[in-house]
Amino acid sequence: MRPHLLVAVPVLLLALAGCGESAAPARPAGPGDAPAAVSTSLADLQTKLASIAKDECALTKDPAAVYPRCGRFVREVQNSTPAARADSAGLAIEPGVRAAADAVDAAVDQMARDQCTTPMGAGTPGPPEACGPDLVALQAAVKALVAAVGTAP
Image 1: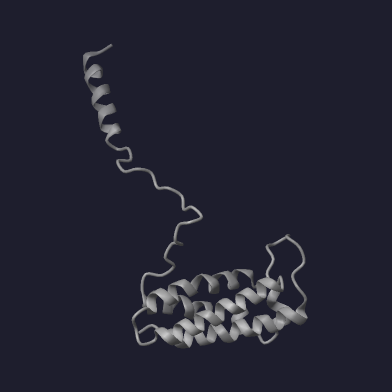
Image 2: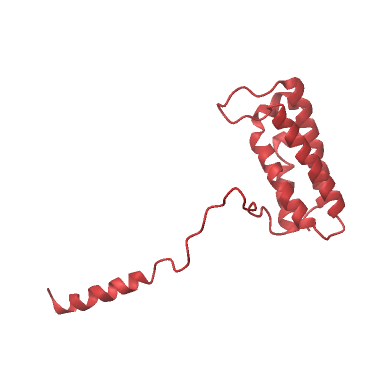
C-alpha cells in the first residue's frame, strides 16, 4: 500500500466520524406527550384560518352533497383549535376564541358521532340527513373562529 494512503484513510475516517449526529436521536411522540404546536403565532393562525375558510367545505351551499369529501377540511379545522387557544391566551380576544374553538370541537365531534367523515375506502359515510346539518354547524363554527381570531395584518 502506498504511504500517502495509509495517512489519508485514517484522516478521512476521522473526518467522517465527526459528521455523525452528535445529539441523541429524536424520540417519537408517545401517547402521553403533548401534541406538537400547530401554530407559532397569532398571525400564522390567522393566515391558516383564512385559508381554511376558503375551502369548498367551508363555503358550500349544498353541504349534504359535499360532506363525504370533507375529511381533510374537518381535520384541518380540528387541528387549528389547540393553536387558537394557545395563541390567544392572555389576549383580549381569548374568551371569544375559546368559545369559538369549543364550538368547532363540538361540531367536529358531532360529525364523528354521525360518521360523516370516514377514511377513503373505510366504509360508507353517515347519512346526508345528519351530516348535511353537521357540516352547516361546522361551517358556522369556523366562521365564528375566524371572526374571533381576526385577520392577519
